[in-house]
Length: 153
Image (cartoon, helix red, strand yellow):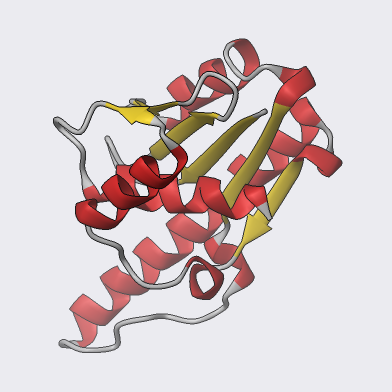
């Protein structure tokens, strides 16, 4: 089984994608700069017959998280939230179209939970004896890893 976690964002280099191959015991992070690169990844690299995808879909939570700042800052933040809601819903829908709804799970930001540190990712990898290259890991990657784990349950 391959577990894929996707933490979409509407910004260049904003996608966090993690692939956990539970048979090969490997964890890898996929880099895409934009949504069009994600489409190519989804169509060409996700093994349809043995994959479970979990997507953080911020569209499941209809709130603006940070209302601090002046009127212009609040408006900008709201636009960013709306863009992220749209891209995460689109990613979820695309994955369902490609893989079938039974192979795709969506979770809200609240279900994803708090940010985890790299040390927690390393501890989980040790527990399951998964190999992982820990160099150049960003917070988006860590988030995608823990989103992928939600597909185990």
